[in-house]
Every structure is written in C-alpha cells, then in structure tokens.
Length: 251
Image: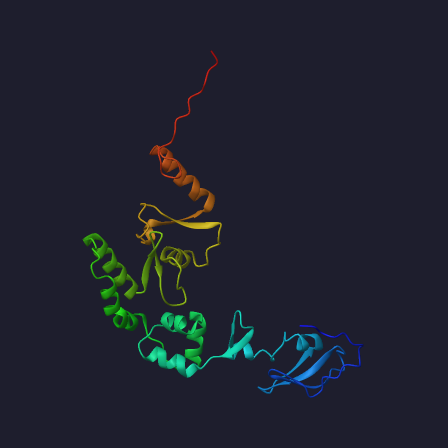
C-alpha cells in the first residue's frame, strides 16, 4: 500500500472511518495523533500512519471479538452461538477448535463468556468413552498396562497424578505441585527456596511422602548424596556401569 507523505497540518482525517474507528478531531497534546471514537464507544488516540496503513482497526475490542485469519489479511467475526451449539451437540473443546480453526483457549474463553457450563473431566470421559473404545478396537493391551491405567484414573479422580515418579496435585491452589514439597513447606512453616532447596526421599521411594521419610537438603547436598550412592553401586550418574580407565604406560 502506498501512503502519500504530506506536510504536518495539511492532512485532514476528520469524519473518516477506518474499520471500527471514526476520526473525531486532531489531538491537541499529540499533534501527530487523531482522536478516534470506536464503535464500542471508547475514545482512543491513534497516529495517522497507523490508520492509513490499517495497523489500527479498533480501540482493542476487535481482538477480543474477532480472530485473525492468516493469508486473507482481514478479521472474521466469531459466532459464539455456533460454538455453543457445536459444543452442546457433544463435541469436545478440541473438536470445536478444529472445526472452526481456532485455538482451544479461545474456544473455552468464548464459551464461558457466553454462559456455557463446561463439562468436568468425568463427564467428558463418559461422553468420549464409546469413541475411544471404537478407536482402540483390535488393539491388544497387556494386563500390566491396564492396571497402570486403572491406578492412574483412580489417582486423578482423587486429585493426584504421577509425574517423574512423584505424586502431584491436579486441583486446588497447589495444582501441579508435587506433594512432598507441599508437606515439607508445612513442616518448616515457610515456602521452599527454589532452586536452592530440594526435598529428599530417604528410602528412595518417590511416592512415600511420610514426614519421617522426607529430608530438606540443599541442591548441592542432594546431588552429592545421589552421586555417592551411585558410586557405591558401581554406576555413574546416568545409571550405566562406570567405565574403568586404564593408564597407558610408555614402553
């Protein structure tokens, strides 16, 4: 797009419309900016070059009500009623996002703003259960894998899941945090100093979070302790046998 350069003061944009912005008058304090009124009723100061080059189309409300479609260089409004109808028909937020080429976070935000009550994880699992059973038809699953999946579902139902061998919470204010860190903070009466302080499991069982099995250590002490234990077992830090280096003597 070619933008003509004019002398300051000779350009008059009063009354012109740029998408959702209507130019009211030139800003007194900011001579190179114009006072614009948005269709939503907000007043904003916008540079003339931004208006002419279509870099500003609204006061900012357009980004909340519309999405940008790459390649077409224009904004397309989202019909929230269509999103709600698709979600209420039984589709998940992921399927709705794929249907309308949107992000999952945007779909969730628009549905909540529209007053749609989102399903819980249990409701979603019941709804998608038959679909997954059809998709897994013919797939052989070992009994050990079934046991792990069953334990994982039970733990998540209780608000707990396993990450890197440690137990963590899936809900509440401490969502995503490891349980042994939370217990240690309650014992010492203050938050842990990250990353200098770590909690060590004395018996080596990462899921045994009894207070008597937890020990507060510095990161250096914790690393040295595990390195010493690995050396005693003849293993280096990666868990493979330590290679013996032979000294070559000159003949």
